[in-house]
Length: 420
Figure 1 (cartoon, rainbow, N blue to C red):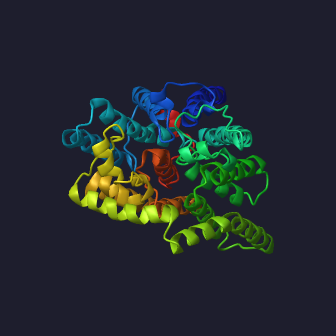
Figure 2 (cartoon, one colour):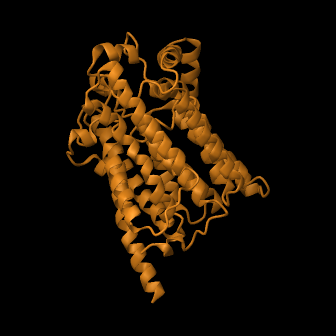
Figure 3 (cartoon, helix red, strand yellow):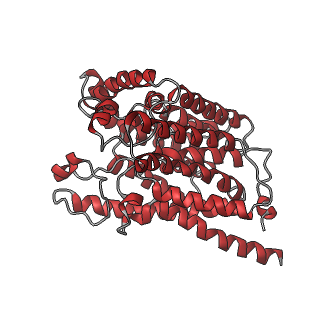
């Protein structure tokens, strides 16, 4: 009887997991959804709406509410974003809709509470991974087809409103680039898959390997972020080193060497491009260096809680102040310095607190390799890509959930028994 109830419960949990992935991948970019929920590569409103409903359902169903390791600080982050963005309306003259669209994406932080509860169950966690792998492969195939069709013809069959940069619209011969949509969730999910593959010594890992390779391919071919790809590969290597530190065999060493060589081959062109940009003081490196100076100045002028998260594009004078005279600076391109400008020293303090707590979770984790890799990715990303940016909120939540559910103090297998 209990086994039948367990199977029914697991079949029911498939629904919210599938809904999560549909919202995260925006229905695989196949449906013409409303622009407020869909348009723009950094738009996370659809997932935010899902997160709010999931949290409300969780509150109704759960018998005993627990904060977890990150719950209180996540609510403080949301309060800071809401307060800072609302106050910025007074200084900059934002409309109420601009304020709301700056705050709404941070409802994604509420997803932490139901996720840490349900994913603590090993069966549900496995469902989450497998469904995620299938969705990853599907969306990757769609974008490979889109890239082939777009190159040289600018033919677009996926729904990508305001997601393709102007340069690639004007130069379809260079192929398609869509930034940010493969960031966030994939940044952490790639490490989960890598850890599973390494833990199983590449045996019975075909789906894991295909999904992992697909993520790397999407970062390299569609997102085209050099530092993002480099950070993921370095973090995977950290996981490999930790898992094999006491039991390195000739076979593992050979596999690891081939993996590292392959990774170097993939990113060598990217690294050379970064070095050339630095030495030539040009390209994205120049924009970032100048951006750091600019956002330090903005942050010092709004020292405590920053300028908030509202989009200034519709107000030219404000946009000039936020993005610089040439409009080429973006706070989400300069990591924690950009965060300082957006949320002030309070935001930076909360960010460091979350990062330190994640590293502390490593000490009590029953999967130290994965948590170490996730923490390394978190720390390295902070240099240029803050986890408080809306595009990486899913990475922030998933990092916190992994730290929570892998704690040795948690009862993992049947934690869901206290839910009606």
